[in-house]
Length: 137
Image: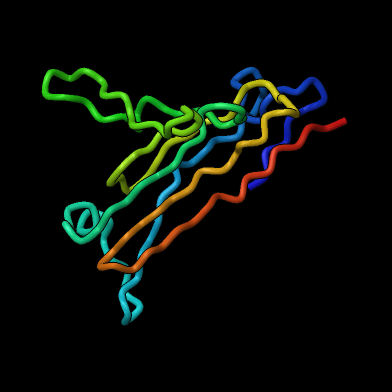
C-alpha cells in the first residue's frame, strides 16, 4: 500500500481534503491443509494458537488506535505490552488491528511496518505490511 502525501506534506487521509482516503483495518486469514479458511474467532479461542501484532510507536508515520486496546472489568483502557526499548506496542489474540497515518509527512520516520506473528499448532507464521510513504515534489 502506498500513501502519497501532497506537496505540503499533508496526508491523503487528512479530513481537510475533499475526498480523504479511508484506511481499512488489517486482518489475516489462515487456511487449513484442505484450503478452507479457519475462522479467526476459532483461532483466538484456541489454546494452541498465539497471535501477536507488533505495532511501531516511535520513528513512524503510522498511528496506533485506541480501539486496539483492551479494557478491564471497570472499562478502563489497558495499556499494551511494549518491547524493552519502547519502540513497539504488542497486541495479542486480535483478529484485526486498526491504524491511521500521520497527518504530516516526515522523511526521517522510517519504522513503518506492522508485523504479525502467529504460532498455530506449532507452526510459525509471520507477515509484514508493505507500506510505502511518499511525498509529491
